[in-house]
Every structure is written in C-alpha cells, then in structure tokens.
Image (tube, rainbow, N blue to C red; front, side, top):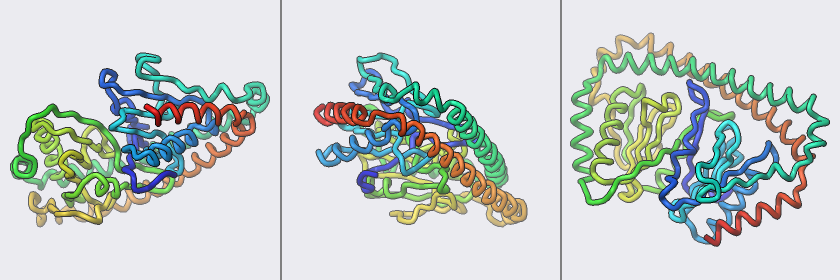
Length: 359
C-alpha cells in the first residue's frame, strides 16, 4: 500500500440496497480527464498496477488520492490524480465501468489478454463454483446490512420526532454564512466515501480530513436526525456560495444522508461523528442535543437500546461474511495467477504507469 499520509477514500461500499459505486462521479468527460479502465479477472495484476501508479505519482510530487477496495482494503480499486486529471481504476465487477468515448478520454487496459484461457477452461469445474459462492456470500452480507440499515432508520425516525428541524436548518444557514461567505467562482461537486463496511469491520479514513483541512468541525449525532438536516442545508449553501466540495454520503443510506462535507479550497470540513465513524480530532464540536428534546427522547431509551444492540450484532455478522467472501476471492486469484504470463503483465503495467506519470 502506498503512502498512508495521502488522502484515502472509498468509491463504493456494500449498502442496504446492494453495492453502491461512485466511480462515474469522479470525472467529467469534457473537463480534460484521462481515464484508464483496467480489465481482467482476479489476480491479473490490476491492484499491482494501481500501487505502482500511486507510488510513482507520489515520488514525482503529484497530488494523489488512493482508493482502497472495500471488499479487501489491502487491495486498491483506483488511484486519482486530481490536479493532473488522471483516473486509473479497476473497471470490473462489482463496479463495472465502460468507456463513453473510447480512446478520447477513456482507455481500456485489458490485463486479461495475458492469461491462458485454455488453462482456466480446464479448471472451470472448480472456478465457476467459487464465483457463485463469492456472489452468494456477498448477497448474504448485503441482507444483514439491509436489516441493520432498517434498524438504524428506525432509530433515526424516532430521534426525528424529538428534533427541532427548523432550529437545525436556521443554525446551518447562519453557520454557512459565517464560516464560508459567498465568493466568485463556479462550484463543483464530487462524491467520495470516507467510510465503508469491509471484511475488517467499518473503516473510517479520518486522516484524510486532516490531510486536506486545517479546520474540522464535528457534529456529534448518534441517530443522525439533526445532522441530516444540517448537512443537507450546508451542502446547498456551500454550492450556492461558489465553493467546490467533496460530498461523502453515508454508506448506510447513500441516497438520503450525507456524513461529511469537505471544502479543500477553504481547508475546511464539516463531519458527522457517531459510534460508526468517530471523529477523534476536531477543531470544534457541535452537539445534536442543541436541537433535540433529550428528556422526551429518553422515553424511547428501551427501543433505541434494542436497535443499537441488534445493529451491532448484524454488522459483526455481515463483516464476518464479507471476510468469508474475500477468502473465496483469494482462492479464485490462485487459479488466475497460475494461468498468467506475468512478464507480459509487467511490461503492460510499466507502459501504462510511465505514460501516466509523463502526462
């Protein structure tokens, strides 16, 4: 794994609705980006190429964002060079990517051309069941995560009953005006995940916040009621004020809730902090109790405690299943590794990496 001081994000995670990818939000086709989409089966050298590209870009002094794989955080899914407008990614399942303008701004790098198809064909009775087992395990993990998501949503709805939504929205408007006054310029929004559910549990890249920002404001909110209103209001206000932002959705409800907002040009971030992604270091903390009738919320303590315990058990089980799925993926890799021409792979890797660094 390259320099861990670099900003790290996920671009996909298993969510209650399945695997949710954000790969297609990284670049604009007319913004001058060069995109390299890596194809090939497990163990064909995609992650190795990404590691080489990241290491050489860092050594060359380029701005680099590293994207680990949520299915196996020891492996990479992508490398982004924001200033150079270069995006190198694994374009295979579950985050399949195809070029919109082949050769114009997107190029396919097919590492699959270096494996011996005849050798793999002879092992099909062993390989195909492993693919099916991996898919079944990932599906089972998703069902556990979906059940946990339902309980988290239930706790959110309970907390919303005792949240002063108008007060939270007023606070957010005043906060945005005070902290990031309007400026000239065109706003732009990109999407990343700062946390994801992995075989090793929930991983949160807090160091990314501090590598990009001098100020980190944490909203302490266990149930996400007040913070959901505040973050949604801040997102709109920041964009209207002319700032480019990195929006980080919540992996448990990516279409409905924002966990973090990062404004790199202002070296500023606003984050939610809870038991799933605790912000340990913050310039300032805002507590949701300011917007919540805490005495009334305590009347629902028994239900909230049950949900919390059940979510914990479901998430532990989901991560164990994802770990089993990753072990099956490792078995698949062995078959492909045994069938690979790695001399050819290495030449292709070096050619791609050199072309990226020289751009």
